[in-house]
Length: 298
Image 1 (tube, helix red, strand yellow):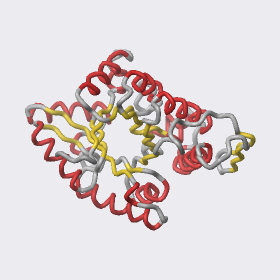
Image 2 (spheres, one colour; image 1 turned 90 degrees about the vertical axis):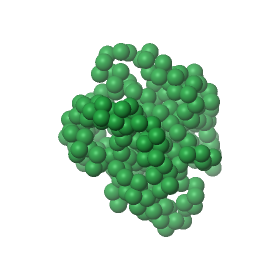
Image 3 (cartoon, helix red, strand yellow; image 1 turned 60 degrees about the horizontal axis):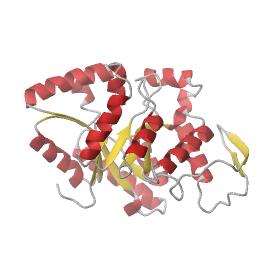
């Protein structure tokens, strides 16, 4: 699968260590092992109550400090849960620590009762999660606009938030802020990714699904007057390597515990693989041939 433009990342198991009450140390051990094996990037997921886990920006700060050659990212951060200025403060600080190696994968939250529960608890309207995310992105882009004079106070008037005299927040290390990738599928999300984001990080169940989605997002970018070649097509996959029958049984158990749904159903929604390494390479190659250029493996 040699491809100079292809990058491979590993998802840090923040949810799994929480379930087993193992603390944070195994997360850094995992990051150390993944960096030693040559993974290009290390990622952390996000959830407040639906699937509790270690807070992703905090974990990634430790990883960024320990492994200066590795890209870090969120897959995916629930931007709609967070007050945008407080989040911008944390993100800018993390990007400074990472010296510009941060990627923000962002999601609005799945349309399921568990997501509504955690958004209610955080004081965020579930039925407005998409517009909250998009307004949050607009605020961050305004704060991090490289053409904005930092001495001039920023004023923002939106549907969910309004701010005046914002002038002293630190900026990220990277000019313009970290790349923002949208997680999600569906026609509207795909067009939103192409129109407003720097990349797309979905988990479609087949390479054909991925190819169709990428074509829609790329066309939306072109329609918005953006260069589709500057849009990063990423992919999130869940993999269990081993003897095929045993690996499949383990994956079935994992998925049923994690999602409270059977693997047979979840496989119609997400990208899952169980089996030997050779088969996994061929399976991922299908997505690469469909256009994926940054693979994040759980």
